[in-house]
Amino acid sequence: MGRARFSLEAATEFIRTTASSEGTLSECAVAWAKYCRARGYGVDLARLARLPFAAEEKSLARWFERLRRAKPPGERHQGFWFGVNEFEEGGQSFEDFYWGVVTSAALDVDPSEWGWGKGAIGPKGRYAGSTILKQLWAADGPVPKSEARHVFVLGYVALVAARSCLALPRAKRQLRRIVAVGYDEGDLVLLGALTDTGFTTEAEASPKKAPKPQRTLAPATLFRVERDIHRQKGWLLDSPTQRSGREVAYGFGADARRKKPVPLKMERYLGGREMDFSFTVLDVPVVNRRVADIITRHDPKSVQLLPVTLQGSRERYWVLNVVAKVPPSHFKAWTKKHRRPVAEASIGRRLIARAGVVHSALVVARPLAEALVEAEVTGISLEPITREDVA
Image 1: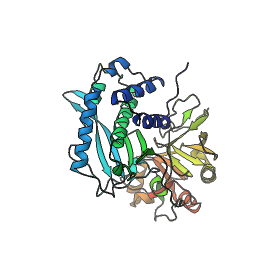
Image 2: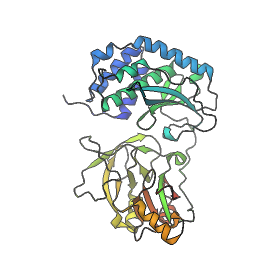
Image 3: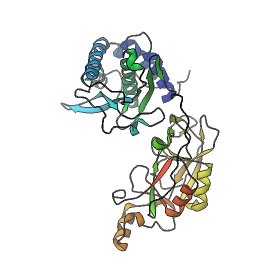
Image 4: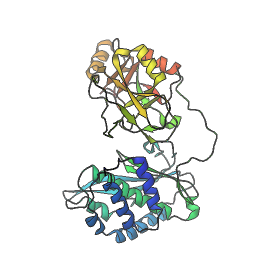
């Protein structure tokens, strides 16, 4: 029997179900380990079972209760975040996780864009001091130092987070706070909104507002393309894969057209409204037919469209392989020669290119930017580039 393919969405549902069971933390962790093993992630079940889960469970219960009493979340706090970080102590690396409370959170918003501003809570003593995570990182630990450990640790912390939240008094669970778990710079699990009956991924019934695309442009000639899923309540897409399930690194590093493109497929990473112009979790641009037509009509030589099948969508989408590149040195030379702001720079006859800018590394010239705004393209915002962007 071949191994099952790993899906974050399916894994999250397994974690929700397992955390809601009557089993101990040890039993839940072993169940998660078996789930990982069935998908090709090596975990030594015998070594795992010998770890001190019973002591960890009591310690974490006291830790979570102490934090809540020391700094109780108010009604305005909408989300719980359990973040995983790596540390080094005495020449040894290990991981630990912490608890934080955010003021703004939503089921259809990437947790990296939740509200960590004024009013958010990062209480003293927020790190759990997890003995299990330290032992998982030991050289002779039950999970090898590889992607398997990354996946197993994420799932384990998600189990702890889910069990901790489900143990809250019913009155606290009725506030529908949204719970997410993840690495501060990487993968995450969105457990859902906490209710008195468990976790739900369904938003409360409310009138659906249409996404509001950008309608005006700043006075500049060059713009960086930024994802705008928070304001527009848009989805977040997972990385494209081949039919075999192998992830394809279609990013911004190749500077070349794919001579023999392979069939691609893609899933949603986080729910939300479908967007015309999207970026995946690894910043790969994805466009629908309307956007593809606009871009190829304005600058067909600077891009290559790679068809991708998006699970659960009837619309056609393409990975946008931007083959034109403008190095940061171009902007420095241009601004020095013309003595004008970098946002007014020219990229020659190109209307879209990759450049040394932050985040998406995608730049469009004003004629194309105007066409995207006029068409009310959703999923992005167009921001004037600055000197810091191309440094």
